[in-house]
Length: 83
Image 1 (cartoon, rainbow, N blue to C red):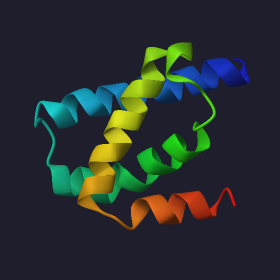
Image 2 (cartoon, rainbow, N blue to C red):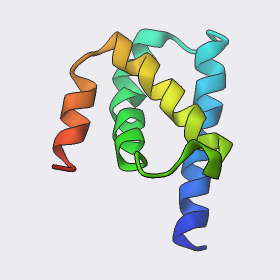
Image 3 (tube, one colour):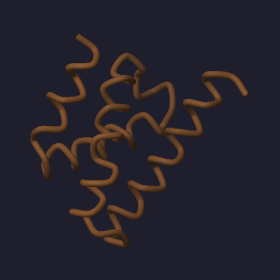
Image 4 (cartoon, one colour):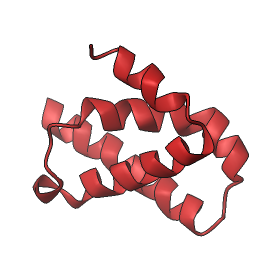
């Protein structure tokens, strides 16, 4: 494995979560508590990866935005790690 392949796998997993979240296959409140901080943190980490580089980057950003709407504390918490 390479770091970029590892990142691809993480982004792919979040894409699966996004699909389930969009289809309401998982409870939004439970997903926010279990995954929200991870999704928003990875989105903050990947801010410098352009959406054109991989479609998974856009999917991660969209999912993170949904979690941001459900819990406004997640984004400031995640960004604090990168200051």
